[in-house]
Image (cartoon, rainbow, N blue to C red; front, side, top):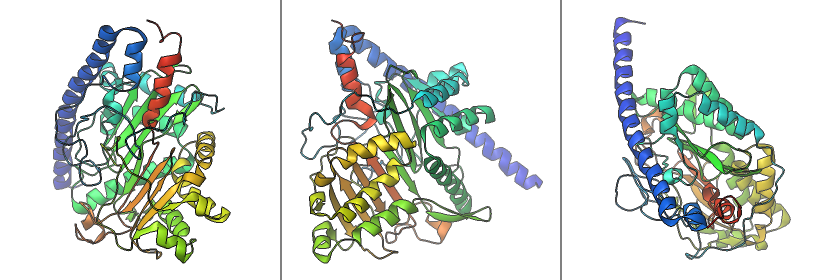
Length: 442
């Protein structure tokens, strides 16, 4: 390394360290606000009423005040900081939840490995790191995530961790995700680093700007969960007994394919391929119903960050109008996202989703050729998936594009959610607090 390179590296590390200190100070303050709000609510309300309120997220504090709860167009979460300005209700078609969709029951999912990995991760943190990383299970922190690079996150970043601590975090992801899910997270981070290097901005775009938070205390009987949050990658993972809710999860990349250390790294291809396979399996008459527009806007996503309570009517082609083969291809879009969890979690989730295939709707905008930019939304009472090919953004220079150009498969945003109140496992959490004897005390 030359003296010039060494100087640049040293300056860069100083700059990153200053940024980490600023983030840590803000995170510590925010954590105190969150915990204070929960404790005050319990003390004031008392008994089962307090637990029910906490489960409904009706007493959670918020971050610094901001404007509208949605960020950039389509709820993508604008630059800078956003805050939650309303209580959690969940995605609905008309502002009213559908009841009796989710229940506490045995699924046979093996959650012991992820519990053990989470305990080890927390134990490996310093006291200060743990204090800024661990929140109560009912904390509004669940909802304070964004796919935008400049968003000021809570928790502890990978940049804050030693190699040993990073390994414990990796072990937690490995315990929660399938091989495909783990590989997808790694590829998104690798491309984020390489693209940042290509445009000369690794301060904003790098592989370590991803943050851990843990909600609650890892337990075999009590509810808890974790969040892994950064640019183009957000994983929310809730656990209650042997039930897991892995949503909302945001997966994206710009570009979606890039040479990294001589290797072509590709990500977010599976959801694009599955979507195109489905739309091209339809008859001309079916496509006429499913395709709302032959063109698409730069950004079409409806339920990105800060859109937890989006209201969106069903649109497009209904599942009961599909053949058996077409239904399988529709479910295959969803399965791309669901299969990023461990196999037993994915099986339980797909069984739930498949039961509603007849009342699942799909709507499309854009072209249907192999290289077309498009938007697709799959929407049922229990699942919401969006795949959105967007225009070149801040990393456009990394692949020879111009920011603000036409939508492309080289910039993809996608999300999976659980409508009707069970994102972040909120509906299961509510039922737990209302029915568990040790919580249900007046």
